[in-house]
Length: 107
Image (cartoon, rainbow, N blue to C red; front, top):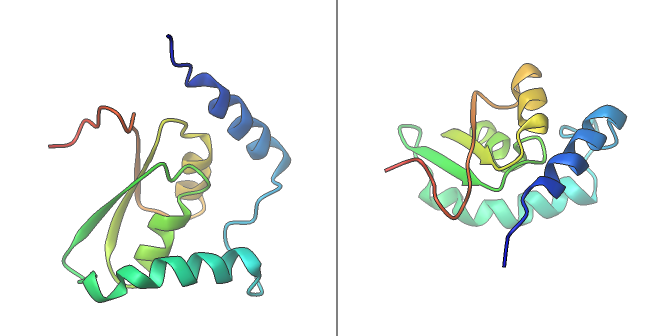
C-alpha cells in the first residue's frame, strides 16, 4: 500500500492563499484557549536554555510559536511547509524544516 503525503500540501497551499487562519488572534478565542489549555501541561518542563522540536506543526507553527512565547526555543517541523514559511516571515517562529514524522532527519 502506497502512502500519499501530497494531500496536506495542497490543503495548506489553499489556506495560505485564502488566509483563513489567523495564527495570532487579537483577542483570545476558542482556538487560542484550547491551545493554551493543552500546551500549558509542558510548561513545568520548559527551561530557557532548552530547545524543542515540534512535529506536525504545519498550521503556522502554532505549537512552536507558543513555546517561544513562553520562554523556550523551538524548531517547527511538518511534511508540508508553506504555512511554516509564512509563520517565519511574520516572526512567529525562528526555525522550521520539512520533516516526515516516520523518518526524522534529526539525531
